[in-house]
Length: 80
Image (cartoon, rainbow, N blue to C red; front, side):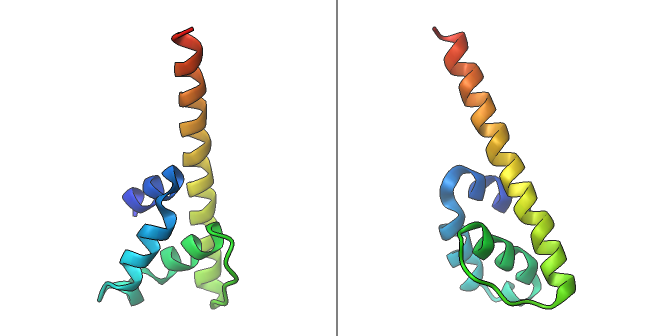
């Protein structure tokens, strides 16, 4: 799960989603699938429990992306 979150934060969300959807494990990863769809701006429909988990996962992806951006900015400043 954490790998998928980090990959999505690095701009690979669509690839991760495609891989999961093609996997036999896709049904058990529905919260992650919904989260990735949302993160990619797609409309989703899911039961409330899955929806709540997906919301948390989207927040995790956004936090990971913000962390990457902060690291990148700090590295750029330190090399100047």
